[in-house]
Length: 155
Image 1 (spheres, rainbow, N blue to C red):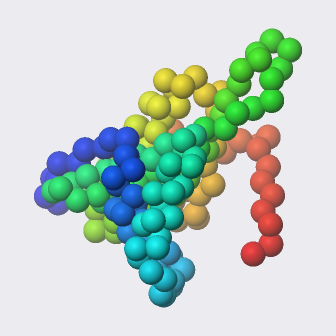
Image 2: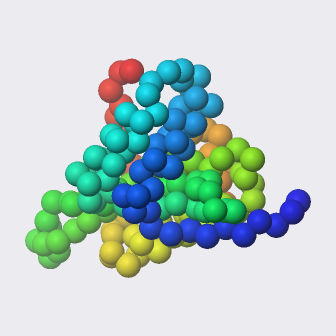
């Protein structure tokens, strides 16, 4: 395996087109998505980034291209008697291009996301994983929590 230099950084609005491309690629690969205007998705991604400052995107770059992403949604929590300001996080939309999987790109993205969570003092961070990615999260320090339950609307 040839080593490749990967850098991870906070995404900026200028990355909206690259982020949209990764979202589109994931939908195509995971769900067989066909169609839709890439420019519309890029515009929607830019709108989302402007309208949702609590969602922090991180990108992985290699050879001048964006090759991975991960999002941290920062969520305000209800105050308690002893902590009036509380926040948690949720990791969303993690994706690494298939040709660079198993090369530590995802681990670098997770490290950046969790560094951000620590710097923000988040109480906890959750992730909803595909079955394929559970082992990745476990290798990167995540564990199952028997107290966390999920509900999902019918699809």
